[in-house]
Length: 312
Image (cartoon, rainbow, N blue to C red; front, side, top):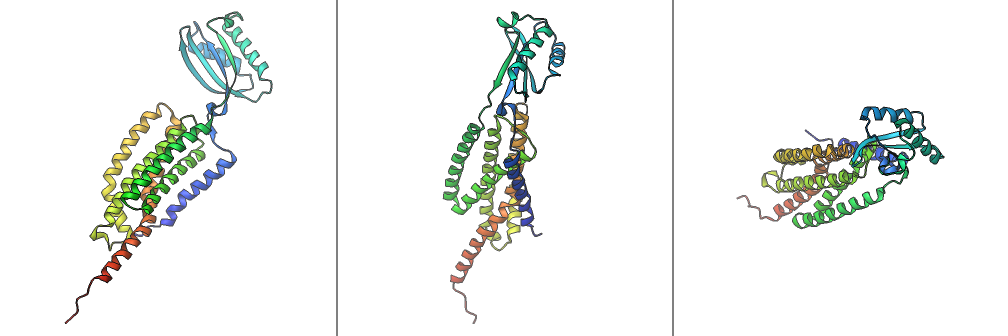
């Protein structure tokens, strides 16, 4: 069966194009930690959580705010409900004063209660967003170091051309993961660097192992006259057990991290899918067309130099 390589290339190309368009138009779907937010903290004292939430909702429902997150925290003074929100109101100081006054009244506290330890109602000003530049700079440096190392290793063991193919594969997989994250509008958190580095590491391991196996199979005497599709199919069959083991190991890691940060976990899973797709369905065919042609040319030259027996 002849592989339609150009059709398979079209899929990631379209994903990259859509991702680039989204990046330069709507941008990333940033989490509140990366876009900034306002914060309210209420010590609920002797109230139950459900009663406290009802009181808070009654105060905030008429305000021009968008609630992004509720969370429970505990300290030595009791349980604290933390509410993160955003607003387009220009005079935020007046808004904050009104919210604080109404919460104090709703919970039956006094103004004096909120001026002593413990603070019963605290309405913070704008919380500045954390920098995405630091996240991308750190992950970019880590990936760069990894790519340089794998480039040197593969160049010494196989060839510079093969090293370039692996580096390009890793870059492609990482860009596909970022594009899919943009397309799915997954929230970008401060942990997004884990998805970037994780995708790059998975791609490096998968591509290095698979291409080493592909080179090994290509040099076998029984495969020298085989078609590219036959060599790739043979390699995929012999590599299938290793691929399953790698995927299962990564699924365990992804499943464990999902309890910590779901959106980053989904991005990481998308990166793994991209790496499997490109390493099995695209890059081997491009590599085979270039690398195996050199092997055949070299073999033909060797055959032509060998003395031929004369027919008597």
